[in-house]
Length: 295
Image (cartoon, rainbow, N blue to C red):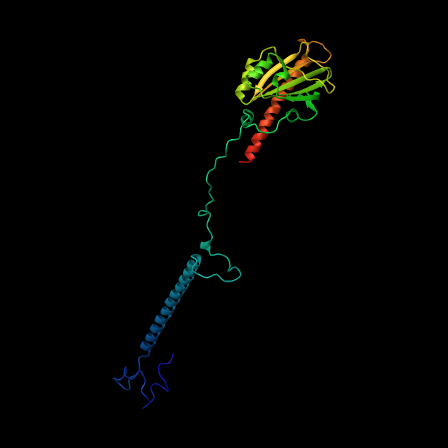
Protein backbone atom coordinates (compact mmCIF):
# COMPACT_ATOMS: atom_id res chain seq x y z
CA UNK A 1 0.00 0.00 0.00
CA UNK A 2 1.32 3.50 -0.82
CA UNK A 3 0.95 6.35 1.65
CA UNK A 4 1.05 9.34 -0.74
CA UNK A 5 0.03 10.47 -4.17
CA UNK A 6 2.20 11.82 -7.01
CA UNK A 7 6.00 11.71 -6.63
CA UNK A 8 8.14 11.13 -3.61
CA UNK A 9 6.58 12.09 -0.33
CA UNK A 10 9.64 13.99 0.75
CA UNK A 11 10.86 15.77 -2.31
CA UNK A 12 12.27 19.30 -1.64
CA UNK A 13 9.70 22.06 -2.02
CA UNK A 14 7.36 19.45 -3.31
CA UNK A 15 3.64 19.22 -2.74
CA UNK A 16 2.36 18.59 0.71
CA UNK A 17 1.56 15.00 1.67
CA UNK A 18 -0.88 13.66 4.25
CA UNK A 19 2.02 13.18 6.60
CA UNK A 20 3.16 16.88 6.71
CA UNK A 21 1.01 17.82 9.67
CA UNK A 22 2.21 14.85 11.67
CA UNK A 23 5.85 15.68 11.22
CA UNK A 24 5.77 19.52 11.18
CA UNK A 25 7.85 19.97 14.31
CA UNK A 26 11.03 19.62 12.35
CA UNK A 27 11.15 19.83 8.64
CA UNK A 28 14.43 17.94 8.50
CA UNK A 29 13.49 15.23 11.07
CA UNK A 30 13.64 11.65 9.75
CA UNK A 31 10.30 9.70 10.11
CA UNK A 32 10.18 6.83 12.60
CA UNK A 33 9.95 4.02 10.12
CA UNK A 34 9.69 1.32 12.73
CA UNK A 35 6.67 3.00 14.35
CA UNK A 36 5.05 3.50 10.99
CA UNK A 37 5.61 -0.12 10.07
CA UNK A 38 4.15 -1.24 13.39
CA UNK A 39 1.06 0.95 12.88
CA UNK A 40 0.61 -0.37 9.36
CA UNK A 41 0.87 -3.97 10.55
CA UNK A 42 -1.63 -3.25 13.32
CA UNK A 43 -4.07 -1.82 10.81
CA UNK A 44 -3.59 -4.86 8.58
CA UNK A 45 -4.28 -7.21 11.48
CA UNK A 46 -7.45 -5.35 12.36
CA UNK A 47 -8.59 -5.46 8.74
CA UNK A 48 -7.93 -9.18 8.46
CA UNK A 49 -9.78 -9.73 11.72
CA UNK A 50 -12.74 -7.69 10.47
CA UNK A 51 -12.74 -9.66 7.22
CA UNK A 52 -12.70 -12.99 9.11
CA UNK A 53 -15.48 -11.88 11.45
CA UNK A 54 -17.47 -10.47 8.56
CA UNK A 55 -17.08 -13.71 6.60
CA UNK A 56 -18.22 -15.73 9.56
CA UNK A 57 -21.22 -13.49 10.07
CA UNK A 58 -22.04 -13.73 6.36
CA UNK A 59 -21.86 -17.53 6.53
CA UNK A 60 -24.14 -17.57 9.54
CA UNK A 61 -26.53 -15.22 7.78
CA UNK A 62 -26.61 -17.37 4.66
CA UNK A 63 -27.21 -20.49 6.77
CA UNK A 64 -30.01 -18.75 8.63
CA UNK A 65 -31.55 -17.62 5.35
CA UNK A 66 -31.42 -21.16 3.96
CA UNK A 67 -32.92 -22.57 7.16
CA UNK A 68 -35.63 -19.92 7.08
CA UNK A 69 -36.36 -20.80 3.47
CA UNK A 70 -36.59 -24.49 4.33
CA UNK A 71 -38.91 -23.79 7.24
CA UNK A 72 -41.09 -21.61 5.05
CA UNK A 73 -41.14 -24.29 2.37
CA UNK A 74 -42.24 -26.88 4.90
CA UNK A 75 -44.90 -24.47 6.08
CA UNK A 76 -46.34 -24.17 2.62
CA UNK A 77 -45.38 -20.46 2.16
CA UNK A 78 -43.26 -21.05 -0.93
CA UNK A 79 -44.60 -21.75 -4.39
CA UNK A 80 -43.74 -25.10 -5.93
CA UNK A 81 -42.28 -25.14 -9.43
CA UNK A 82 -41.03 -27.72 -11.86
CA UNK A 83 -42.54 -31.01 -13.10
CA UNK A 84 -44.27 -31.69 -9.79
CA UNK A 85 -45.74 -28.21 -9.38
CA UNK A 86 -49.28 -29.59 -9.68
CA UNK A 87 -48.88 -31.67 -6.55
CA UNK A 88 -50.64 -30.34 -3.44
CA UNK A 89 -48.64 -28.62 -0.75
CA UNK A 90 -47.61 -30.64 2.27
CA UNK A 91 -50.29 -29.06 4.43
CA UNK A 92 -52.94 -30.03 1.87
CA UNK A 93 -52.27 -33.76 2.33
CA UNK A 94 -54.00 -35.13 5.44
CA UNK A 95 -51.80 -37.13 7.72
CA UNK A 96 -52.72 -40.56 9.01
CA UNK A 97 -53.51 -39.05 12.41
CA UNK A 98 -55.94 -36.48 10.97
CA UNK A 99 -57.81 -38.73 8.50
CA UNK A 100 -61.10 -40.11 9.75
CA UNK A 101 -63.01 -43.07 8.41
CA UNK A 102 -66.58 -42.45 7.26
CA UNK A 103 -69.16 -43.22 9.88
CA UNK A 104 -72.60 -44.64 9.31
CA UNK A 105 -75.66 -44.63 11.43
CA UNK A 106 -76.23 -48.02 13.06
CA UNK A 107 -79.03 -49.96 11.45
CA UNK A 108 -80.98 -52.93 12.67
CA UNK A 109 -82.06 -55.54 10.16
CA UNK A 110 -85.70 -56.52 10.45
CA UNK A 111 -86.26 -59.96 11.97
CA UNK A 112 -86.83 -62.75 9.44
CA UNK A 113 -90.43 -63.56 8.69
CA UNK A 114 -91.78 -66.75 10.24
CA UNK A 115 -93.08 -69.14 7.55
CA UNK A 116 -95.62 -70.56 9.97
CA UNK A 117 -97.30 -67.14 10.25
CA UNK A 118 -98.30 -67.43 6.60
CA UNK A 119 -99.95 -70.85 6.89
CA UNK A 120 -101.66 -70.26 10.24
CA UNK A 121 -104.65 -68.26 9.00
CA UNK A 122 -106.62 -67.97 5.79
CA UNK A 123 -106.11 -64.19 5.98
CA UNK A 124 -102.37 -64.54 5.26
CA UNK A 125 -102.32 -67.89 3.45
CA UNK A 126 -103.30 -66.44 0.06
CA UNK A 127 -101.15 -68.44 -2.36
CA UNK A 128 -102.99 -70.75 -4.79
CA UNK A 129 -103.46 -74.28 -3.50
CA UNK A 130 -104.51 -77.62 -4.94
CA UNK A 131 -103.43 -81.26 -4.49
CA UNK A 132 -100.98 -80.97 -7.38
CA UNK A 133 -99.54 -77.68 -6.02
CA UNK A 134 -99.12 -79.08 -2.51
CA UNK A 135 -97.84 -82.42 -3.83
CA UNK A 136 -96.03 -81.60 -7.09
CA UNK A 137 -94.26 -84.03 -9.39
CA UNK A 138 -94.98 -87.65 -10.22
CA UNK A 139 -93.34 -89.40 -7.27
CA UNK A 140 -92.20 -89.19 -3.66
CA UNK A 141 -88.68 -90.17 -2.59
CA UNK A 142 -88.16 -90.98 1.09
CA UNK A 143 -85.02 -90.51 3.17
CA UNK A 144 -83.91 -94.11 2.50
CA UNK A 145 -84.21 -93.39 -1.27
CA UNK A 146 -87.37 -95.44 -1.66
CA UNK A 147 -89.43 -94.12 -4.57
CA UNK A 148 -93.26 -94.11 -4.48
CA UNK A 149 -95.27 -93.43 -7.58
CA UNK A 150 -97.85 -90.68 -7.36
CA UNK A 151 -101.37 -91.90 -8.09
CA UNK A 152 -104.76 -90.15 -8.07
CA UNK A 153 -105.52 -86.76 -6.45
CA UNK A 154 -108.80 -85.21 -5.32
CA UNK A 155 -110.14 -82.01 -3.75
CA UNK A 156 -113.54 -81.17 -2.31
CA UNK A 157 -115.21 -78.53 -0.17
CA UNK A 158 -117.57 -81.21 1.16
CA UNK A 159 -115.17 -82.29 3.85
CA UNK A 160 -117.36 -85.08 5.24
CA UNK A 161 -117.40 -86.86 1.87
CA UNK A 162 -113.63 -87.45 1.96
CA UNK A 163 -113.49 -89.10 5.40
CA UNK A 164 -115.07 -91.89 7.40
CA UNK A 165 -115.71 -92.99 10.96
CA UNK A 166 -115.95 -90.11 13.43
CA UNK A 167 -113.87 -87.66 11.45
CA UNK A 168 -116.71 -86.14 9.44
CA UNK A 169 -118.41 -84.67 12.52
CA UNK A 170 -115.10 -83.36 13.88
CA UNK A 171 -114.32 -81.59 10.60
CA UNK A 172 -117.76 -80.06 10.30
CA UNK A 173 -117.84 -78.86 13.90
CA UNK A 174 -114.60 -76.97 13.32
CA UNK A 175 -115.73 -75.41 10.01
CA UNK A 176 -113.55 -77.37 7.61
CA UNK A 177 -113.34 -75.54 4.26
CA UNK A 178 -111.69 -78.18 2.05
CA UNK A 179 -110.13 -81.64 2.02
CA UNK A 180 -107.43 -82.53 -0.51
CA UNK A 181 -106.18 -86.10 -1.02
CA UNK A 182 -103.27 -87.77 -2.80
CA UNK A 183 -102.20 -91.41 -3.05
CA UNK A 184 -98.74 -92.90 -3.49
CA UNK A 185 -97.92 -96.58 -4.02
CA UNK A 186 -94.92 -98.89 -4.15
CA UNK A 187 -95.32 -102.60 -4.79
CA UNK A 188 -98.38 -103.88 -2.95
CA UNK A 189 -98.39 -101.00 -0.42
CA UNK A 190 -100.40 -97.83 -0.93
CA UNK A 191 -100.87 -94.71 1.23
CA UNK A 192 -103.34 -91.83 1.04
CA UNK A 193 -102.80 -88.44 2.66
CA UNK A 194 -105.80 -86.24 3.43
CA UNK A 195 -105.23 -82.54 4.18
CA UNK A 196 -108.12 -80.59 5.76
CA UNK A 197 -108.07 -76.75 5.62
CA UNK A 198 -109.46 -74.36 8.23
CA UNK A 199 -109.52 -70.60 8.66
CA UNK A 200 -107.40 -70.64 11.81
CA UNK A 201 -104.64 -72.63 13.45
CA UNK A 202 -106.81 -73.13 16.53
CA UNK A 203 -109.47 -74.99 14.52
CA UNK A 204 -106.92 -77.37 13.02
CA UNK A 205 -105.38 -78.01 16.44
CA UNK A 206 -108.85 -78.75 17.84
CA UNK A 207 -109.44 -81.36 15.14
CA UNK A 208 -106.17 -83.08 16.00
CA UNK A 209 -107.06 -83.09 19.69
CA UNK A 210 -110.58 -84.45 19.10
CA UNK A 211 -109.63 -87.18 16.64
CA UNK A 212 -109.74 -90.81 17.84
CA UNK A 213 -108.90 -94.23 16.45
CA UNK A 214 -112.06 -94.18 14.32
CA UNK A 215 -111.28 -90.80 12.76
CA UNK A 216 -110.08 -91.89 9.32
CA UNK A 217 -109.46 -90.29 5.93
CA UNK A 218 -110.96 -92.35 3.10
CA UNK A 219 -108.28 -94.00 0.94
CA UNK A 220 -108.16 -92.76 -2.66
CA UNK A 221 -107.85 -95.42 -5.37
CA UNK A 222 -107.58 -95.18 -9.12
CA UNK A 223 -104.86 -94.47 -11.68
CA UNK A 224 -103.53 -98.04 -11.32
CA UNK A 225 -104.03 -98.21 -7.56
CA UNK A 226 -106.65 -100.80 -6.43
CA UNK A 227 -109.10 -100.07 -3.63
CA UNK A 228 -107.43 -100.50 -0.25
CA UNK A 229 -108.06 -99.91 3.43
CA UNK A 230 -111.84 -99.91 3.20
CA UNK A 231 -112.53 -103.11 5.05
CA UNK A 232 -109.07 -104.18 6.18
CA UNK A 233 -106.87 -103.18 9.10
CA UNK A 234 -104.54 -100.31 8.14
CA UNK A 235 -102.05 -97.97 9.74
CA UNK A 236 -103.23 -94.35 10.33
CA UNK A 237 -101.70 -91.09 11.54
CA UNK A 238 -103.18 -87.72 12.59
CA UNK A 239 -101.44 -84.37 12.99
CA UNK A 240 -101.79 -80.63 12.38
CA UNK A 241 -99.57 -77.69 11.39
CA UNK A 242 -100.75 -74.15 11.03
CA UNK A 243 -104.31 -74.09 9.70
CA UNK A 244 -103.92 -77.59 8.24
CA UNK A 245 -104.91 -80.92 9.81
CA UNK A 246 -103.52 -83.91 7.94
CA UNK A 247 -104.13 -87.63 8.08
CA UNK A 248 -102.67 -90.74 6.45
CA UNK A 249 -103.96 -94.24 5.91
CA UNK A 250 -101.59 -96.99 4.75
CA UNK A 251 -102.16 -100.64 3.92
CA UNK A 252 -101.93 -103.42 1.38
CA UNK A 253 -103.59 -103.28 -2.00
CA UNK A 254 -104.07 -107.09 -2.06
CA UNK A 255 -106.65 -107.11 0.75
CA UNK A 256 -104.23 -108.20 3.46
CA UNK A 257 -104.55 -106.83 6.99
CA UNK A 258 -101.65 -104.89 8.45
CA UNK A 259 -99.91 -106.47 11.45
CA UNK A 260 -97.22 -105.26 13.82
CA UNK A 261 -94.66 -107.15 11.77
CA UNK A 262 -95.36 -105.12 8.64
CA UNK A 263 -92.77 -102.44 9.28
CA UNK A 264 -92.77 -101.41 5.61
CA UNK A 265 -96.37 -100.22 6.03
CA UNK A 266 -95.47 -98.12 9.07
CA UNK A 267 -92.42 -96.69 7.32
CA UNK A 268 -94.51 -95.73 4.29
CA UNK A 269 -97.24 -94.06 6.36
CA UNK A 270 -94.71 -92.10 8.42
CA UNK A 271 -92.80 -91.04 5.30
CA UNK A 272 -95.92 -89.54 3.68
CA UNK A 273 -96.92 -87.82 6.96
CA UNK A 274 -93.47 -86.24 7.14
CA UNK A 275 -93.58 -85.27 3.47
CA UNK A 276 -96.97 -83.63 3.97
CA UNK A 277 -95.67 -81.56 6.87
CA UNK A 278 -92.63 -80.50 4.79
CA UNK A 279 -94.82 -79.46 1.86
CA UNK A 280 -97.05 -77.32 4.09
CA UNK A 281 -93.95 -75.72 5.62
CA UNK A 282 -92.47 -75.00 2.17
CA UNK A 283 -95.70 -73.26 1.30
CA UNK A 284 -95.17 -70.98 4.30
CA UNK A 285 -91.53 -70.40 3.35
CA UNK A 286 -92.44 -69.39 -0.20
CA UNK A 287 -94.98 -66.82 1.02
CA UNK A 288 -92.60 -65.48 3.68
CA UNK A 289 -89.85 -65.01 1.07
CA UNK A 290 -92.24 -63.23 -1.27
CA UNK A 291 -93.39 -60.93 1.50
CA UNK A 292 -89.80 -60.15 2.54
CA UNK A 293 -88.85 -59.31 -1.04
CA UNK A 294 -91.72 -56.84 -1.22
CA UNK A 295 -90.77 -54.98 1.97
